[in-house]
Amino acid sequence: MRANVRASMVALAAVIVVASITPMTAQQGDLDPRIVKLVASVSEERLSVILKKLESFETRSTLSSTTSPTRGIGAARQWIFDEMKNYSPKLQVSFDTYQVVPQGRITRDVELRNVMAVLPGRSPRRIYISGHYDTVARDGGQGASNAGAAPAASRAPAVDPNAPLDNLAPGVNDDGSGTALAIELARIFSQSGIEFDATLVFMAHVGEEQGLMGAWLHAKKAVDQKIPIEAVLNNDIVGNDRGGNGIVDGATIRVYSEGPEDSPSRALARFVQRWGGRYVPSHKVRPMSRPDRFGRGGDHSAYNQLGFTAVGFRESRENFTRQHDVRDTYEGISLPYLAQNARVNAAAAATLALAPPPPAVTNDRGQPSITRAPSGYDANLTWQAAPGASAYRIFWREAWGPDWQHEMTVGNVTHVVLPNMQIDDYVFGVAALDAAGHESFVSAYVSPPRGDSAVKTKGQ
Ligand SMILES: [Zn+2]
Picture 1 (cartoon, protein in one colour):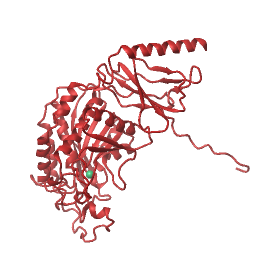
Picture 2 (tube, helix red, strand yellow):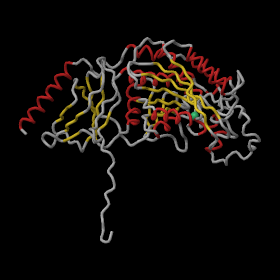
Picture 3 (cartoon, rainbow, N blue to C red):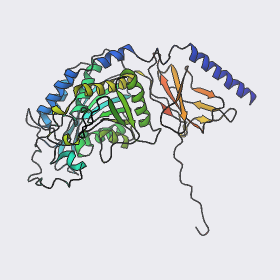
Picture 4 (cartoon, rainbow, N blue to C red):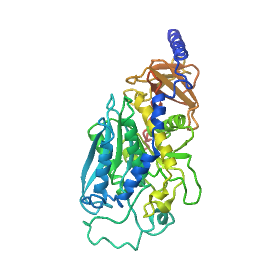
């Protein structure tokens, strides 16, 4: 016992010494000049070109024409493919294709094609930046839906379910904005010359408006093929800064994430706030402790459903009369606002992709590797070494409240003891750092939910 105490005190002393001689301070080491340059290379002009081109297809409905070279989803997906292919020989651009049968809002057999561009990193773990390129417009749009209108009664039932759904649906904000953001980041990342540890994937999903279909099918494929998706930054409706109620906010972006409070998706949202905020201090990241807005959905939730870590970016003030509506045109876009949202995405994705993966903080039985040893009153944290890590950062906060309150950088160790810190009173987490200080998102020590323990009564 006494030996254990001494050993742990020596260990802690060693940790503190390492922390004090490593020049990885929050002030000096955090901003990587390469990421600063990358973030600065987001171009409003390029975003504008992409948005106008997407609008020119008039509709990108999943059920629209695939044969016209200038109109409908076939022309749109081919243009997105060719555009990203053009950026760099390093980008591996492909269609991610599925054959889908009639179901729900899908009225006929249809081929779904996500467009994906992969920028290979040193490791196969993947960071996604995504949007959906398909569009929809219906009578009254989202404005009528929000105001409690009945489903469009004036719309005649389709005479021929096989006919292309070619009505005008420009979808410049929903979700031309997220698509343009992902395409622009494909350009700047692939041309940056930075060698990332993680593999980056720039994805334009399809079938979102029919129930997150393209995203779900891709996530299912990733489960089946054991593709290691570490994080998904999904952007859907991120280009308008004028609320339909007249309130303007061009300096805030909302980030939605599913719970519980220390889920990996929440940790990713905190990460976006922390690193997006450091590289783009003029833009406020506002994390939302809920999966999405009321009654609304997005592709990040399809990834969540299949067990992946994913968050959804949403503009601060929506104009519902311009969603799912013929009025969702280029005029509704603020380029400076969309560019700021792209910079926040770029900062978060680049930091994550340069950092080691987050360390595992559970033992082989899935229990958090945190104890009160050696004194019985200490916080004793153990984690598994993350590949490529050369240091770790411990975080903690009161067990009431969402944001980390304290942090301490420790050396290349996988164990630390904080004497007299009652583990029941704080949430603890740990992130991995590479030699240059790039930080992973935080793995938190949380107990899995308890099973139901039924009490037997007489006669049972
Ligand atoms: Zn959307």
